[in-house]
Length: 80
Figure 1 (cartoon, one colour):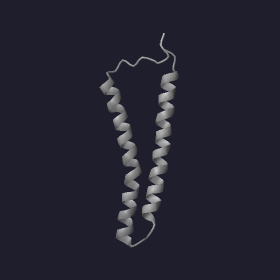
Figure 2 (figure 1 turned 90 degrees about the vertical axis):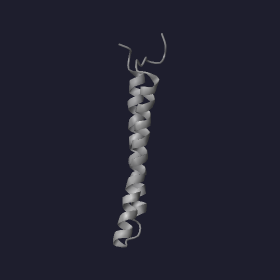
Figure 3 (figure 1 turned 30 degrees about the horizontal axis):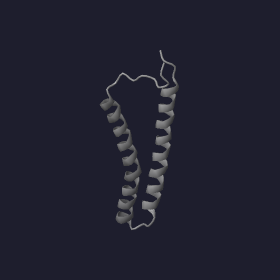
Figure 4 (figure 1 turned 90 degrees about the horizontal axis):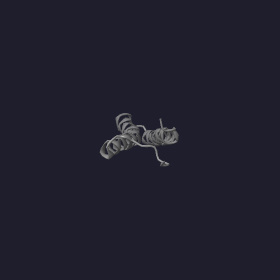
């Protein structure tokens, strides 16, 4: 009996799932900063880009932790 649970999906399917997750986290990091930059330019305000990037990084770290917890639960789940 192996320590790792079996995943019946092909390796490429697993890889695509992780690529999608990583891409979503990257967009989550960058988009609030870009919106902040756009708002800075449109309204002549300073500092919204920094707030946007801080918000984006915070959200991305939160979702990375969520992904890690879900993956850990999946690995610790007893084989059925």
